[in-house]
Structures are given as C-alpha cells and as structure tokens.
Amino acid sequence: MSNEVDVLIIGAGPVGLYAAYYAGFRELSTAVMDSLPEPGGQVSALYPEKLIYDIAGFPEVRGRDLVENLLAQAGRFSPTLLLHRAAEKLERTADGRWDVTSTDGHCVRARAVIISGGIGTFTPRPLPAGSHFEDRGLSYFVPQPAEHTGKDVVVVGGGDSAVDWALTLQGIARSVTLVHRREAFRAHEHSVRKLTESGVEILTPYVVSDARGDGSLREIDVTHARSKESRTLHCDSVVAALGFTANLGALESWGLTVQNRRVLVDSQMQTNLPLVYAAGDIADYRGKVRLIAVGFGEAAIAVNNAAVSINPDLELFPGHSTDTAA
View (cartoon, rainbow, N blue to C red):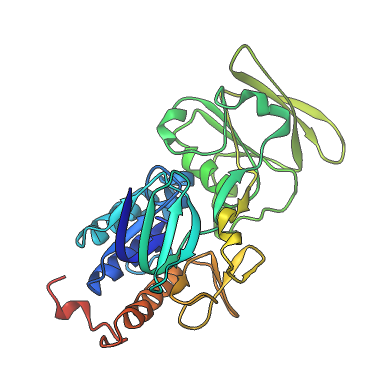
C-alpha cells in the first residue's frame, strides 16, 4: 500500500492536526501518520478530560474538545489519516522526494515532510510496588474519569498530570488521596494552590511501599520518606502519574541533527535535511518555549516555508483566511 502527497505530517497531535489544516489551506495534498490508534497525541492518550487554559481564544477548553475541533478544522481539506502506523524509514528518492515507510510496510511518498511527533513514543514509568496490579486497579492514565465514580482513588506523583487528575477526580470519586515522595510539587503553582484548597487528601513525603488485593487492588502501604512510618490506605484504584520515558525510535536513524531527544531546526522550522521540517515539542532552537500555542505557530511557519519550497511561484505569506471561503 502507498500514498503520494505534497506533505506528509508525522504525528497527529494538536500541532500535527493544525499543520494538516494549514497545508490544506495552502492547497497542498496531505497525509498524517501516527503510531497511536486515534488522533490527538498526548492530549488524547493522557488527559482528554483535562481543561487547557492557554489556547488563544478559549478561556478554557477540554482536551478532547480541542482535538475534535482540530480534526474538524483539518477535515475541510480531507487529509489522509494513517493511524496506528509508526514511521520507520525515511529515504530520499531520485527526484528529490521522500519515501516514509511505516512499521507495517505502508509507504508514503511526499515532496516535504513535517515532523510533529511531540516527544516521540512515550512509556509510563512503572509503580514498582504495585506493577503486578496493572489493569487490575492500577493504571497510568485517566481517559475516562467516570470509570472512577464512587471509588476510593489514590493518585501517585507530584507533576502536572498527577495534580490535574487528582483535581479532575475530586467530586467524581468517593475520595481522592494524592501521594508524593517529596514535599514540593513539580506541577504548576496555580494547580498546586487549587489542590491544597480542594478536598483531596495530600500525603507528602510518602512513597508506595506495598500493594495488596484479592485479584484486584484493594489497599496500599505508604511509607514516610524520613521517619519510615507506614500507614495503609484502602483503595479501589491507583493512578500512577510518575512521568514518562521518551524515545525518538527510528527518527534517530534518519540523519537528523538531534540534541537532548529534540530535532534542531532553523528559523524556517527546517531540519538539516532538505524539505524536512519539525514543529511542536520535538523541535528545538534557541529560546524555545514548549507550549501548544507556540507549536501552532511553528506548524504554520513550517507549512508556509514548505509550500514555497515545493512551488517557488507561491508567496510565503499565505494571505488571510478571512479573504477565502475556507
């Protein structure tokens, strides 16, 4: 199987979906490839119900709704979505195009490639004391908060995901307890303030030292990091939000200039390879700020520069969307 397009976007997260819209706006045929089975990237996989506050024009928007809106926006131009396909090989053709082959052998020939794969593939860090209860009360994501309705839930971690999930589940679950191994949190200050003002029980500095159950997880032991005093918590579910390990996978073999698991780009968002661009969290340059809002701008820069490289008769400035029927 194969496709031939003007632009292939690798990564169907928010930045990749916006790039698909912009490529369509520039009248470029487009395909989007992603290793995950559904579009939305980390937003869909990790926090679809989380409220996001820093998207321009939206005082707040739920992650799932943001992805749906981006799909509708890109859908005006009918991009080809190639989901559950991880990009594996990048090869230059004799006429200067790029062949990208997925792990299942699907090949896309494109005149330009935009990499928007976030942090690459990501794997949750396990909870050592309870890993044998995975899918039996222990989880690493909260895709459906309603599944925790009426339950006693323990969230483990001190980053943004842990605090966000604790706040989301408070009011849905019967009780929420957050366990963190340090006194200080890595999460955003505003979120931590909301946490301390909520009904969530906060246990710091504690670590999970044991987990027990009768087929499903029923209780855990937590031990104070300094005094070594232990206590037992009843729980129906545990959400381990201990962070993720990122892996660029095959991208590291493509000849790209990579530094600290990021792809280096210039002011046009172009990598060291001709007609290969990067945007979003995976792209890096001096002064980079890793926000979805910044990624949207980078996607527009990458697409517009790709457009004039593909067709030198085009103008770099795309015109205003209000001047078109799009």
